[in-house]
Image (cartoon, rainbow, N blue to C red; front, side, top):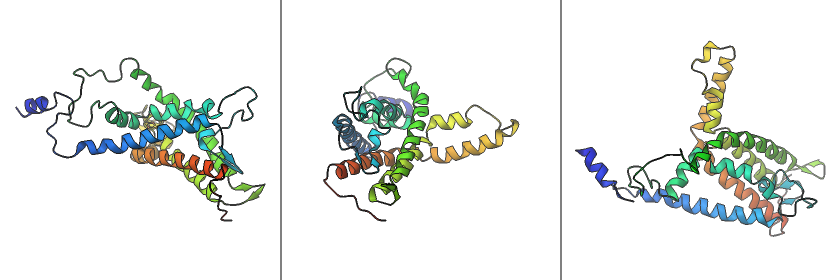
Length: 251
Ligand code: FES
């Protein structure tokens, strides 16, 4: 009987027996993802103010054909698909934007529009399964960002520390935590084995899996922190490169 009442109460969009303000959870997702999407699109097409001294904006890393020998548009457009595809197909973000933007469903135990549930078994959402391949690309991008972070401490060949060095390093670190806490990576390192002590490298694999699991439990946190850090790192480099602010040298 209780089950029948619950089913009735979630029959149409937004219908629910929940008494809490469940919709509040959707607001920050819409605002933050919406604003980030607009800012990142403008910056990707801008094609300017992406580098200053030893600093390179993460939106433009790796920097390809900055002098437009064969690519007439913004260099960011050449590399955008990698990080964007990784984030858009992320298991956590999928849940967040399906709920916030498609209301599908809006929240747990809250009614949705569709009566049938097909999950991600049909086009276009079946394409979300390419996430594991975007993971490989994302790991390559982490290597470039780590290189940029190290380079940001070199001012005309001499070691130094600017605020930008710290900003780019923090960003590389947070993006690494986001990437290495990925669900697909957790499956990759330990999901294909039932007994860690039964194989030659099982102990090593078990330790790796436990490490990734520790990070994976905090994946949502890293997803948001890295989204803020990558946006702010670009904004910092843009502000310094355009002359809006001066980089503060700490050493
Ligand atoms: Fe979020 Fe892979 S699940 S990055």
